[in-house]
Length: 300
Image (cartoon, rainbow, N blue to C red):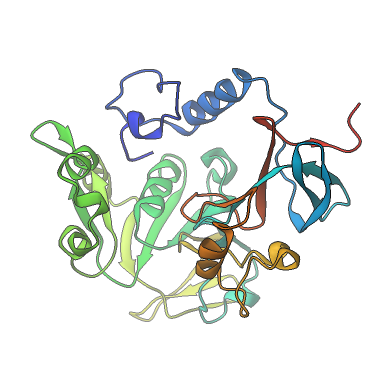
């Protein structure tokens, strides 16, 4: 994470350790696992929803039936559609990408740096994820950051306080007009305490202008040379979820399936809520029964 741990805390359970420190991947996983275990709930992941339909009303009122793509079915009086902003990894149209002979993966598929030990890696992208992954890989691989614009850095801390907290306390993080002031210029600013710039100064990872194309298992650089590489990693962000078509039967979508329309329609329907800003894959649905997450029809 590149934001303070306190900003990652969920209601009722503070994030352990230094609240102003940046949490590692394993710390976040451990926190979420512990958080789930604290509550008497049946939490299930990996169920992509195909359809939500109104079932026969029960003694307590409206009931919804949630059908998943793997053939399972759940019922609940409450459905929360969490479309999120990270449902579709963005794979840009780069010449030769589709026929690249070796490994191409998106940052969402990245696991651990040990998997790439000794390999030649080119990362397409210059945002926070790209730089963080590059720093990890550079410990045991030869890495290049290929970007359309020069890397831009923003101070992680100002007067000893994390930039995110400054923005939160001043209200700038929620002010749309302030975004150009905070991110002005070309390229996404990377939060840095100085360690990233120091590492880049060593030459690994090295920043280079975006390649012009891929040919076989080679990258073709703008200044002419071709270079054999093992991995092209796309740290190219995400696009909003593909839609909430699974709610179509309920009449909760606009004629074109527009999710912004969903927000206004759903507010008048008992039992359905919409969380457009949640960072969860499109097609995910959380259903609650009597304050507990959904249980399936095949449960005892």
